[in-house]
Length: 288
Image (cartoon, rainbow, N blue to C red; front, side, top):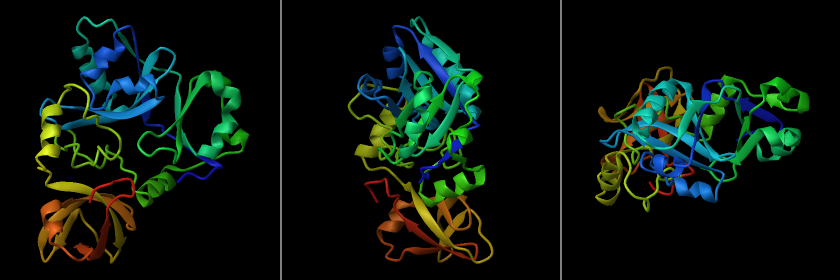
């Protein structure tokens, strides 16, 4: 996905820092994944839900120098800080926003370029996809680390957006609806964001019921678009709405499709506007 000589900088992401003796127990009852995985792994992918199991926000959680770093979109920062403060109660923890961090995605081959920053950085494989690419946090802006000076080229927002869609990488700021979407619809399990072995957490009962009773009505799919001149968000078959597009660039996109309809649907082509839509299970998903 990311060329070995390229990088992308997340201008709209930030890091929340959680420290204190109770940080493991505190966060365990809130998130969808198992925080104890951070005792053996550098990072996990997870989410916070409403008590009714509806999606609020997704994020990466990393273990760094006796603290947790929660990478989150800045649009969710205030909301998540408020929720963490509410759940804090008497827990021995401190919550703050990291002010001097820069967040990047780089190729596996690029990590060696950052050796001189090793003491002031954190680099790890994206836990959703294994070793496809890495995320990088740099913590000292005073050093004025310009990645172009070490032989890397910056990917523009538009090009990264296109790369993401071409490679079926969801962005749940766009590909989910806050306080409405459900993790099983989002294939969050396939993105390594849910633990079925841990104890209770916010929204756990609804999420488990969706899985074990097979109550999922729709799922996210990767789509390829044969653009005919117009496209909207409704995907149809014989004038029946069978899904909706969340995000596209007129060539690739992400969409939710009705699972019950697909069980009896033999074709792979649907209509959106006057464009033909071909849908596929994302490469990272083990389910249809």
